[in-house]
Every structure is written in C-alpha cells, then in structure tokens.
Length: 404
Ligand code: ADP
Ligand code: ASP
Ligand code: MG
Image (tube, rainbow, N blue to C red; front, side):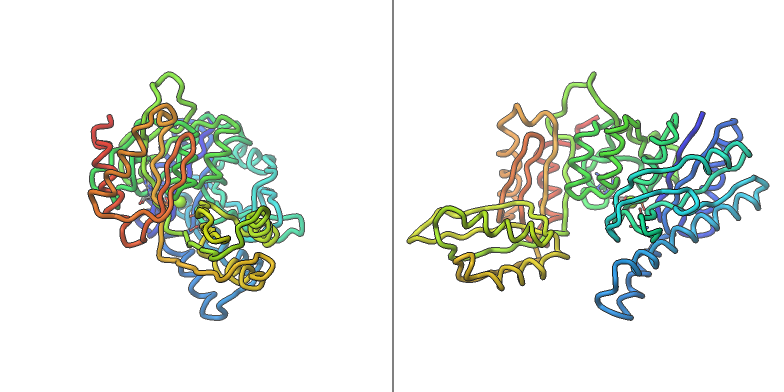
C-alpha cells in the first residue's frame, strides 16, 4: 500500500512534535507500506519569515518572497529525515526541484501543473521513507514558486493523485472537519464525513482546515481524504463523494476575515456602468466577490462589492482614477468587515435556511451589510467584530450540535 501523509505546521512545531510525527510515520512503514510524507514549515515559521521581509521593505518582490518562504518547508523535511535516521530508519528529504513539481509562473499563487514521480518511486524502491516539502513548486524559469497560504494540503493531494496512493491523510491540530471552526464555536461537532462539494465551499469560504485547491484536486482525481489530528488517534473526517447519505441541510459554517468592501457612490443610472466598473476590475486582475446594486434614484445609483484585503488599495486607486469614466461621484472603502457563510448541499430545496440564519443574526443583534446566495450556500457580510457572536448564534439556531 502507498500512503501519503501530510502534517501541518503545528504538528511539527518543535522537537517533541517532530519525533511524534516520525513515530507515526514509522508505524505505517513497519507494516510494509510505502510512505510519502508532506510537511509544512514548523509552527509560525512562515509568518515569521513574512515579518522579516517586511522589516526590509513593505513591498517585497513576489519572486524573492517565494524564495524566502519556501525555506521553512525545507527546514522541516531535513529535520524530519534526521529524526527518522536517529530512530534507525532510512529516509530522504526532497524539495520541489528534486521531485520535479512544475507549476504556473505566478509567484505566491502558483498552480501545480505536472509532477514527475520518477525520483519518488526510485527512493521508495530503495525502501526510503520519502519526505517532500509542501507548499512549493518550480515554474518554467526554474524559479521557486509557492501555492498560496495553506498550500501544503494541495501538494499532498496532488502527490496522492500522481502516485495513485491508496490513502491520503491530512494531519492537523484539530480532530477533523467540524461544523464550524472549533476554536470559535464551542459547540462545533466533528463530521464523520463530508462531500467534496461541501468541503470545497467551506474551504473557499474561509474554513482553513483544508486549502481549497486541495479539495478541488481531490474531487477531480477522486482522492479520498482523511483529516485527522497528529496528537490523537481519533478517527477524523472523511472527505469524499457522498452519495449514499441523505444530503445534509446544513453541514457547516465558515468565516472569512480576508474581506473588504468598496462602495462606488452616485454612478449614473444607465446601461453599461456596471460593465465598465467590473471590466476595470478584471483588467487589473482584481477578484470581486459579493456585489450589491442599489435601486436607481434621481438618475444615480450605488454599487458596492467585496474584494480580498490585499487588493483593496489597488481597487480603490483604479476606481478613483476612473471616476469620470464611470460617471460616479466617489468611492468609499471599509476593511473591518467579514463574511460568514452557511453551507449545505440540502439547502437548495429548502427555503427555510435563509430565515433561520437571519433570525439568529437578528437575535444576536448583528447587522447584515450584504447578502449573497448560491445553491449550496448563503453568505452575509457583517462587521468583523461580530464574527464570533454571529457564528455561535447561527450554529445554535441550526442546532448543528445535534449532528452525529
Ligand atoms: P495546519 O497547519 O495543520 O495546516 P491550519 O491552521 O491550516 O492547520 O488548519 C487547521 C485549523 O483550521 C484549525 O486549528 C481550526 O482552527 C481551523 N478551522 C477552521 N474551520 C474549521 C472547521 N470547519 N473544522 C476544523 N477546523 C477548522
Ligand atoms: N507554510 C505554509 C503556510 O503557512 C503552507 C502551509 O502551511 O500549508 O501557509
Ligand atoms: Mg493548513
């Protein structure tokens, strides 16, 4: 059997944790399995490296940033190899270059394109435990790239797909996927299993327990994932195509604080203005999420929309430079907002979900700025300071603690 095991930063944060992981890996190796281990940078290493870069310059080059951040993962695999050697086992660490993990060229948000499996197979044939750096890749200029924050999950799933692994296990600091972030919602419950689509929504809407690209890849290549804790033997959550189970009305709640709102005020109320506005955003590579347009009055209307916080300044500048083209009066921005979403494959056929969510927010005295819905989710934009209260209130109102 070939097993891919991925351990996140907190699972390898210090010497004790490194040896803890080493022992868990050895358990599988001793059973005669081929084991490929994907590791993230230890503890807060990535954040610390980002802080170091900022000491030098507020706007470091993306290429150099990737060069810097990938050193964290490289430390982890080398240290793990040493730990395994110390325990008397054969192990070899490999980075993205050595494996041949090819990505698109976009620094800091590269996408995996192709993985060579030759080197890994060679090392497995020599009975090595193979330790691979998560999060990193190589682009066509042979430069180092990264897959975006949390990207080691994606490395693991891509490897599992490429190697046709029998198992892909994602080890983290909680016991699985819960109905909401267990650090925010005290009553959150662990899910036994969750479908790719629901997990993909949760991950894309801010539940960082899995990188959203990893779920996309898992669905595409039909890789069954298990999310579980590196510090306990509890069973964890299975992420797969769930068909035999009745679709859950609501499977989870997610919050995303990486959100900012832009309001373009006093736009001329005539055809083509929205096209101009979002055409500009597209041209400048600014992703837009929730959009709200007010009813036109006295020949003018307002359009507000959300973007990620790191594109706020760009978006604001583009609009300000084009106020005349847009025939708009002014632009107002707000970055102390957050998006809270309820996800469930069963809600498409149930009109009561929205009202249950809004009732909870009303009872908790949380004001809603924007609303957006799709077949399997409802999102609201609220003040960032209201997130914890809102999540708990929604969770209680849906009685998600009763999910078994
Ligand atoms: P790792 O370093 O192992 O990749 P992350 O910090 O990226 O770990 O992801 C695990 C964290 O995700 C948990 O500590 C938890 O706070 C958070 N989280 C958010 N939503 C959920 C959820 N629905 N279920 C479980 N954990 C969640
Ligand atoms: N170390 C990277 C990060 O902190 C990748 C990961 O942990 O998955 O984002
Ligand atoms: Mg992670």
